[in-house]
Amino acid sequence: MENLLPIGRFSRMCQLSIKSLRRYDDLGLLHPAHVDRDTGYRYYSVAQAAEAETIRLLRAVDMPLAEIREVLSASGLEERRTRLQRHQERLRERIADQQRALSLLERLIEEDEMSYTVEIKQQIEQPYVSVRKQTDMKEIGEVMGWAMSTLLNGTPAG
Image (tube, rainbow, N blue to C red; front, side, top):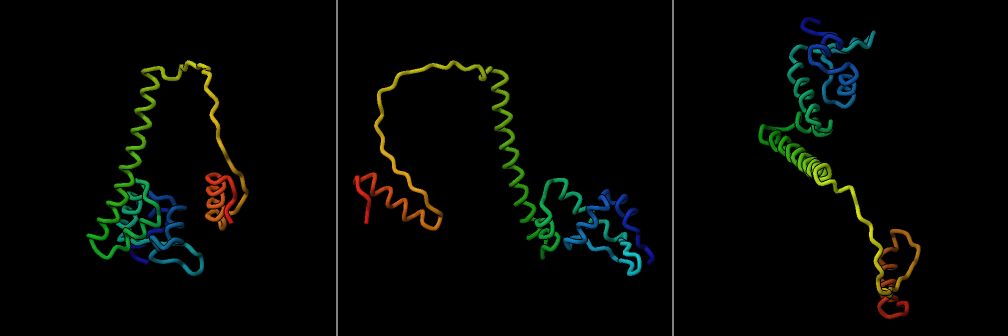
């Protein structure tokens, strides 16, 4: 068992928790180089540190484990790059959403938009027509057709 590290030492070296390493083994992301049959102790080779670091970095940027598996199993540099770019785009969308939320919050702080003036206005009567029917998703199309026909013609179809 030369050049093999027990899971605890490998964990400290790679900055991954023992729990994470066990989970990555269960998910097929990073198997130990050796598992002692008698004790169940897991050992990792120093050569596995690069793959562990890749997993750690991808988790640090919030990549889901299933996608990490796809990145690690990519057949070539171009495929790996494409998968990483897909996640990059998702992060950009999240940042844009957070920027919009931040802008709204800044506006609320600066403009005190939380003080509202409530007015009651009298409106002329608005006639409306409605139908109501309980249904399940399998029959929704048929019920919508019935409802439209009833509303438009004043009588149910069929």
